[in-house]
Amino acid sequence: MSTYSDLTGKNVVVTGANGDIGLAACEQFLDSSCRVFAICHHDDAGLIQLKAKHPQGELLDIKRCDISDRFAVEQLIVTLEEEAECVHVLINNAGICRDNLFSAMSYDEFDRVMQVNLYGTFNMCKSMLRLLRRAKGSAIVNVSSISGITSSFGQVNYSAAKAGVNGFTRTLAAEYGSKGIRVNAVAPGMIESKMVKKVPRQIVRTVISATPLRRLGLPAEIASVITFLSSEASAFVVGQTLVADGGLVMR
Image 1 (cartoon, rainbow, N blue to C red):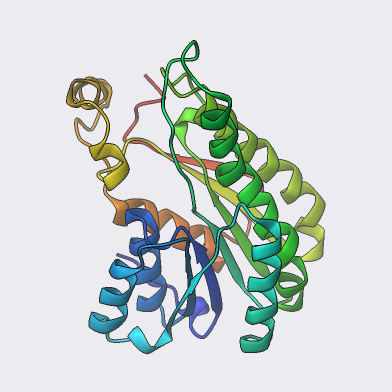
Image 2: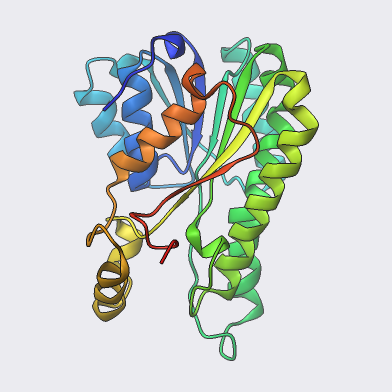
């Protein structure tokens, strides 16, 4: 995977860092010698393993926070301000699914997905703004999904949240591009992950058969898009949602 010398020494915050994509992103930022603040709500075992095995593991700082709780996020920011002068890169990767057919979907299933996936992104960007502006040239990458671009059966809540993330990304990019903060998103297709392992196998096979590359994506492939959008290699890319789905949406 590519490393970017301009990222060396930069402070990076990754939410949902204990998920498959989050772990892969943390690893690739460590490969570029970034100081990584890995944010998870619970279950930090994978992050502890990464910290122990990676040659730059001492640069990984694991923190717990429920990013859907704005007061918890504000307290997290207080801690980050004590430990880092600024934040150069914010990766909003935290997300959950609560799939159900619309007729059976509960208000709680809809609300919880919106709270984590959309409000969590808002909470982190809003609270992190002053730290990002101090960097004088920073980047936000929001992890969306092709579910926010095309229909996704049984995911009215998830699709609505991710479509919201895409719109949020474009408008935030328009507001803050001139202030030195680049904002973009990546929209993964179906990825080999713990989340996808919960999806019925027939649905997974159907998706693979409709994907030109005839396979699921890998977490590291999405992490590579994330690090690209975080680096100066994408310096002229602003307000975009980069689709990484093996060609599924174009079909």
